[in-house]
Image (cartoon, rainbow, N blue to C red):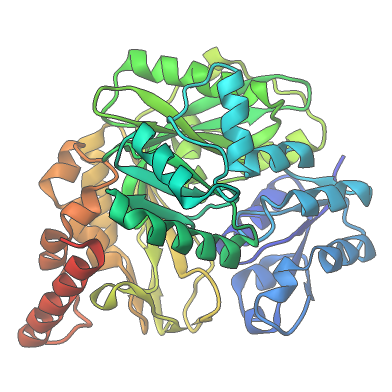
Length: 480
């Protein structure tokens, strides 16, 4: 049994884990750095410990986190998402300290955290992968150019240890390759302290489909349906839907079976995702595995009735998975819109500050996961996520209607958010019909911005000037 859990994270996900702990009558422990003293996860946990004054170092200090956990009598550590959640050295330190890591085993995190190793394991086990290379760092540029010609342009360069949309460069012809390769290496080193880069065939305008995996410590693994995460901006997800509105039942079954096979191939346990790219011919390819709870887990919970964070804790405690694949019968549709504090008119730069008014959407089948509240000061040091708006309905059309209504109700005052931008997407014809891929936002940015009505922007002349500036900036960034 687990009696006390230290949550090695902050913000919305830390609040979510605290609530799961309370549902299970387990004590919760929050950690925080000095700028986060007023964050909601500190207020709602059973106890809280400051882990440093620097905004970030404490959340990344594995040894200090484990020390606090042992000193306060915690049995286990939940890593949330981001920070150290997919750091195998942290997971191993937790294991070696006699504590329970609420996630997969450290060796699995190590293997799946390196995209080259993950690709190799998938290929060895018959899982379809995108044509590509192993790491390129030891190869001369002439050889890298030969690989690109053999694969066929366009190609994409990726950081082996990457994630979160970082360490990715698309290359459309040979003249771009060397600069893109060097840039990708620099970013990989800066963000992941690992400059290994590999190359894949660029699947043009795919859909991004991920399957939620749930497994116990005894080899039992199922999936809990899929999510369509194709609405993205610069590789960052904005909106996620479960199930995917545009694939057949037969394809869903084939992809689900493949996802479970991929998880079994690496001996996976706990909660995670297998992520695929799906092309126009309905061919799908393994992209990566996330060895943690995901930001968008709530939509899967809404259509399956399975509490994924509770399942994480119970699995880590040694509980046998009693569910079989046939028990998973998704009901209706669910959608998540990520509400971030960003200025859409200034290339989505973060917009920290004090929330002077906070009025989340309410009503039937509407859920808000957030750490925000009135008078909360959003720090400038972290991800700009403020809230996740999750809506459920019996069919896709009604779900989008409910999303539109909920976004119109949701009011956050004092800081800029992307709510008007999300509302514009929810009203677009292509989105409402379910016809979109990962290029949707980039292709439709002008139309989305033109229909983004921001009451905080000012009068019509100011809005028109801001629109022109934002569109010109978009064209420059995407070379359109």
